[in-house]
Length: 88
Image (cartoon, rainbow, N blue to C red; front, side, top):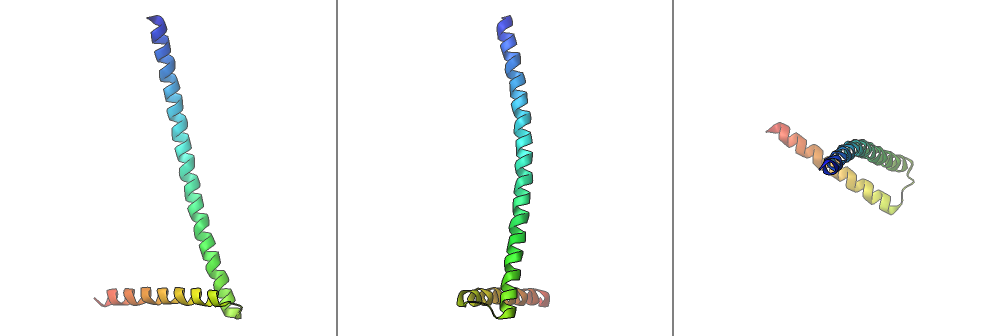
């Protein structure tokens, strides 16, 4: 009976240790996910800046011009939507 109790106690200690490790790993994952999201946003902003610089210098290929036009149209639609919401 003592052996069973000792094994159960070891099992409980191992469970608590694993639970603690799991929480630590979850926190690390959350931090890394937040950092990754921040880096993705920064990358997106830098890509937009590159496109704007290319547009300003006239150094864009046809695909770049189409993508810029698409983005500008999206921004215009968003502005129009905001204006209509303000008018209500």
